[in-house]
Length: 467
Image 1: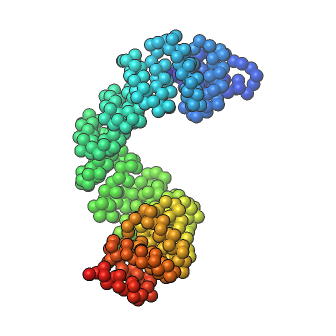
Image 2: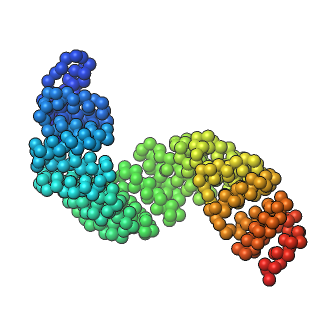
Image 3: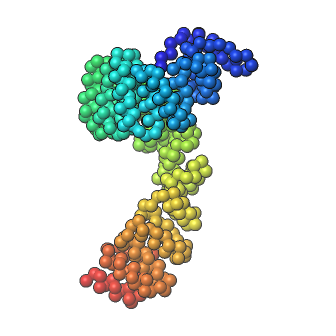
């Protein structure tokens, strides 16, 4: 639906409508005014006010098709699809060639994941609207339905039709590139963007997207050139400076990368991404003081950005300043206690500090959060062994074996634990399995269970496995 009243008229209508709601006086509005009022409320997310406007509008103009179409929109927003369908069927009888009815019908179908039917319905609307100003919007809607269906070639076709009608439809441009990216057709995307830039050579968005494509295929020189053209087209384009910085990092030109990231800080509000990248660049240059300074700025700017906390923690980890590393990973966990990477680092740092109970707690939490890497299971098992928690270590290893069956490292540990607990038949069973799988992991027994290695039956089994 088109809305074309002058802005001043819109404001007057809105003010009158809202004044009316505060009193008991009912004022008259023509149907066009109601349409603009409802459109404004829907655009600004004021659904309750939109509902009031539709109700009052239909009381004053009960035969208005457009107001009834707004009613269907509200039904869809409330997931009242049957009511929306029923009203649309009634409207279709009244105006069978009204394209807006088909658009709303397609919207109902789309919300119910009937995307194929939505496409067919939109194609009917397209036939009815040929030559109308809304044709581009229909192409975009059809393209989006094809995206829902993962039919990227079809989606791309319709988004390209949008660009044919409006060369500066950047939403369509982004969607086209999204389709190329999803299909891993970077070379085709490059060809498309170069053709587009022949027609629109000062389009910073296209240069930026072209640079991203070159970056993906690791042609860093061409990526750099593309981002430079994006900046020439718009020297305040923050995204181009950020991407240029990433390319310069790849080329190990860290000073130049820092310069570009710093430009973004001057152009706009500081972003945690730029601050973090500057920190990494200074770290690569060996300037630890500035590196950690920017890591601090990163977490100050965005305390929820895990990469910032991880960067600070790993920085101190590398410096073997484990207590400081532990201090910062604890701060991170206090902010987000469900971050699996935080808990893994917490466990590793505590293990290095020989705080075994805390390390075990960290590895257990890591597993509880779904990190089932073999090393996580093994680390937790070894700490439980060091703490003398043999039964708990066995349970941990049996759980690990569900994810990593026939793994020698697990079997040697299970053998050692069972022998330690004098469960000799189980010990022999797991040792036999371990030796069959890979006898070279026998060092596990030597390191973790030296007493077990001296048992005559164990010595004999290992010797036989080596023959």
